[in-house]
Image (tube, rainbow, N blue to C red; front, side):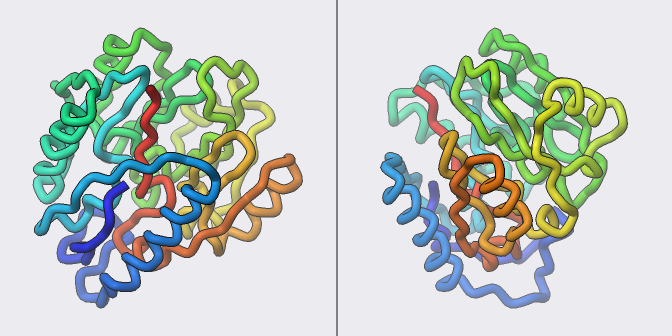
Length: 263
């Protein structure tokens, strides 16, 4: 995670961002701290990367890379405003003992790569290049399933899909997703692979309810995603709502603020 000490919205690279709308950095820090404290209370270990002045989106650490088995695939950002984040995250990975694979293709880390069981779901359409899907497959030697996003409000895969059972090797791993975020071929793939998936409403998705983190039982979600909360409870999960409304102004939620380190 990265504390949002320099969070603000001064440019527009997604539909959520409105530079003319004031942001409250202190409120963003307070809400972020609540998310951090939630992870600690659940027994998770949280590592921090230092924020860098001039990189207001660095709080969205999920975009900084993708990690399995101590191998970190670095990010290469689409927009120039975020491109300096890629080297900063790769430096952190190296300093913390990860084997870093520098990207040749444009990709935005866990924003567009989600591990579901042994399969990597890979998004494209707005940020990560489709060629990055072959690159990540070659690095990790895993099946990669390409999915195309079509709604600019859901510009990263982690805004349109929530991984509910994240453990590697879990043949019964399940997801929740927003059907309208995908093109027809991608939707058909999701329907075939995950027939028991939770289908989330437009209302809950529009506050980034799917942008969540699960340990297989506890699911940390947007506090206002009450419909999704009910769906999770009905399936036997324990949803925990956190208010990140200030960070939503930059187009991010719970998952965006969290990069999972799988060692």
